[in-house]
Image (cartoon, rainbow, N blue to C red):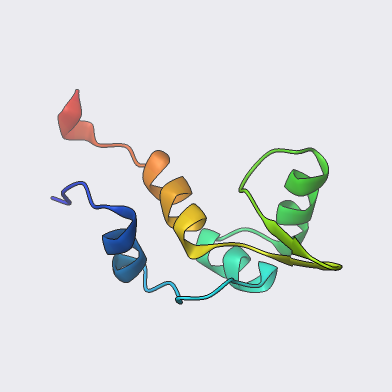
Length: 77
């Protein structure tokens, strides 16, 4: 059984890098396509992101927080 982890522990648990991530990397972690991430940005939903010029990056902390926010614990019921 997993216990609740802080964002820092979640980063280690998920083996996320300590830098801004490319959309291809995020798609692999989340198991979705890059196009899904792009569609979500266009519809203003999904993960928060950072724009640096024309480049889009995601913070590992936001990715970990999103994964943990969608976690379902059957024992909590």
